[in-house]
Length: 499
Ligand code: UN1
Image (cartoon, rainbow, N blue to C red; front, side, top):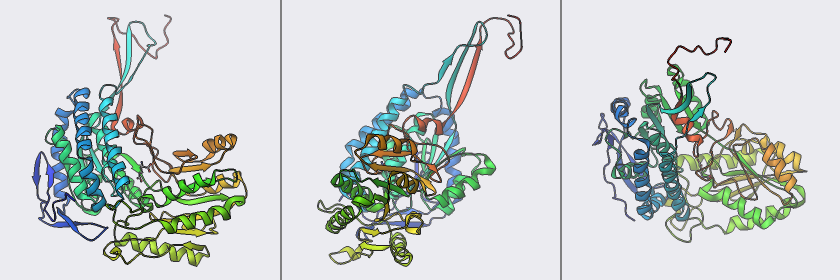
């Protein structure tokens, strides 16, 4: 363990480490064993204002740094993340709680994204097109926008900041970053490595603190034209509403209620592995997690008993131990919310097949652990099949055929990830066409998106934007169309002329 005990950390504004104006602090506490990992500034609107002013000023120089040079800094950042991967992985098992292989995967996503966006520095393609007129040249270029307010969640504390900050930087924007209050130390380390990679003072600023004081000010700040948020649907709605007066660019990546469909012809062992990984990986705390399993009736009983047996074998524990399968959930509030959904499911008449309780004993009382929970005989309209629980709980729903499975899968307000297990290629292609979601997996679970494809969802999962891949560039740039007339005379476009 390499963390620094209860060291006190600061905000990072204009290249300097500074306390919050109020002098107030909050602690980062491990969900695994209650250890205090650090003390952080509890910032307020004044701190956001300072950071936004510095970032606005830094933008004027940063936007002129050639994009390939900006990319080189990201390349160096990716290398530093790789060099520090073991340390960041270990820290993540403590601060966020996920198990070691998943924590390593989280860091790896950030490495991959940073290399990808480093390369983008030598592309950032626009278009060239012929003109309607003689001796005239037409092209379009991507322009940076300005200061980007980055509000990130705790569940991917290294990966998600990279999805937002790497593309925003390579496009030439500057940043005010508010890491989640549950994982400020990882946010801090992320920025320390960016600075070590060579990001100039003022280009990336960190303001620690809560959504109401820091996030809300960022969202309403007139000098922060772009907000990118990964969070809950409720927060997303609030952000859009509060940013409306400034007509901000808003990128939202919100909830999910993702389903895995298992048809009668599926490879059942493979499907079960995919379900366990997608439902209980990261203790179900991914917006891509499978919190519904839609099973055709011919294999329902066999799959349900297979899943129960396998879920009961999963070992709960601290993420840094090698034999742990499932780590803690993030905090006490999350534990209570998850447990309240167990009662809701029971009250609604669903059948609790396994789990449904807070785990204790063997040191687990020091953290927030919940037993992997499976409900059977779930009606698609029940709350446990409609609402995002964000914990290790999944609902088995029995259906007659493919058409009903797709209807049930689509019958929710969200549209992030989806999956089908089948050996029938025709059904697989119909599912790829008909599942109304930003992501569809065939013969794989609902998690594990790669950084070079668009990431995001339909319906209430967002507002139509995507992050990652080329799509991210659309969030962090504006198009400019440029017309160069080299005829030496006034040529009138959109005027009917004889020539
Ligand atoms: C999230 O939970 O917000 O596809 C993101 C996945 C991960 C990202 C999850 N690469 O599951």
